[in-house]
Amino acid sequence: MEIASRNVHKSAVMEAFEHDVLFNETFYDYTQSADSYTQRLAELNSRTFQRQELARTIRTYMEPFGISDVASAHLDELSEDGVVIIGGQQAGLLTGPLYSVHKAITVILLAKQRRKEMGVPVIPVFWVAGEDHDLEEINHIFTEQDGRPVKRQYPERFVLKKMASHTDYDSEQMADYIRLVFRDYEETAYTKKLLEDVLYSAGQEHTFTGFFVRLMNDLFRNHGLLFMDSADKSLRKLESMYFKKLITESEAIAGKVVSKERLFKEQGFGTPIQAAEDAAHLFYVHETGRVLLSRKGDLFVNDAAALQFTTAELLAIADQTPWLLSNNVATRPLMQDMVFPVLAFVGGPGEISYWSLLKDAFNHLEMKMPILVPRISITLVTSGTQHALEKSELTVDEVMAGEVISRRTQFLDEQRDVELEQLLKETEEVIQSQYDKMEQHLSDKDLAHLAEKNRAYHLRQLNYLKDKAEDALLRKYAAAIRNYSLIEGDLYPERNLQERTYTPYPFLNVYGPTLIDDLLDASLPMDGQHVVIYL
Image (cartoon, rainbow, N blue to C red; front, side, top):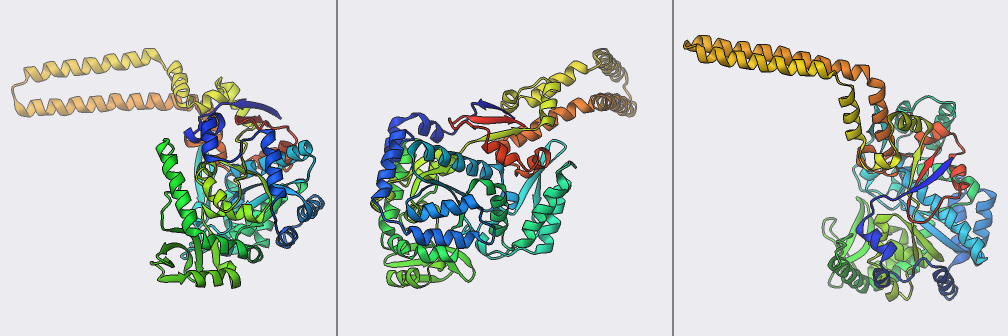
């Protein structure tokens, strides 16, 4: 396994986050310096958390998936004085895109690093956004065919906007879907066992979130990564008092977020969540699904669902049935920080962008925003892709710069039969010239019309010959052309990073089941650069 770092294009927000001191002072409470970690730990030690209740809740949640000895030890530490490195993602089929795995890897590596350097128990946690209800975002994955990503969508349809954690899938349809996906993978020594394991996990679960957590827990079993579903009913009970705070402070929180987003926009970074002054930033779990609440005077409402609650009624729900409430993109980070002793949060570029709007909301609730750390961004290069790169004389940098198409065109141009193309061109010129002379000579309109049809016929035949010559060229160099397609499809599919397109399973299928462990043992750099790993 060989590791290299590359510069890739970053958003304006990430450039500012990494290099602009004033930007960081304006939108965040901490930098990523060693001093910040010391200051953050002191802040956490001054606050009170429901540690034992939280550890019990996580242990109960994880027991059906299996708790390793190291995860159990982490739970014991959490119940005492441990702090956490946390990152999260919505549940995806076959773990969803690779960046979910990369986020978990970053969480684990950072927790190990901070534990060693600070001499305190630092625990890795993956917070699953099971409360998300946009199933269209998670009901498909991409596989690769002939160098192009192909969308494989789970066929079952869901009408209601139910949370991923509350949406049951049909076991037979899911098994058929998984087999369909695996048919797109090349057969290797690992394929049969890998397929059996995924089918077993799908059969053990019945919701998208459960399936996701079981797969992720198996992948990271040796590293003590803790999992918690934001939609878990027991967690909701623990969050009851925090929901009350978010309800009573909802108007102030909305104002803080709107004001910060306005400043964010003025500085040229756009409007990540398009916050509204009347937003309650809370969902209510209705019989028709999860619906967003707004404030209207003293009421919390959703007009489309004909719902309205007084503040007292919503507080009673938070007290008695908190599982009927759910956070949105703005309040989930706030809730996370009230529930967990968060030393640092690991996020992707999109998350870091919308977290930029929350500093004043955190401060209003008498908290500081945790340290934000960008997740590691990775491209995996299999041995087959390495071989194709060598044969095509391309580098990963050139592929990610979008040069494959031009290099493929250049290669074909170099192989063309220049003499034949010149002869075809000369023949076309002769045909055009002779028929031009004929038309000038002919005075009979019918004969002139016939001559024009005759010209078109000869030109079609000539074009047919050209096409056949092009087909012969493509057939002769089909293997080389396939190499170009393979390279682009693997490393930069549809001009997008690999980690945003494919799940880890095609790479587990090629490399084997130790891939995750080997990546975590590989001393991956966390310096903000894109990491390229040659498997």
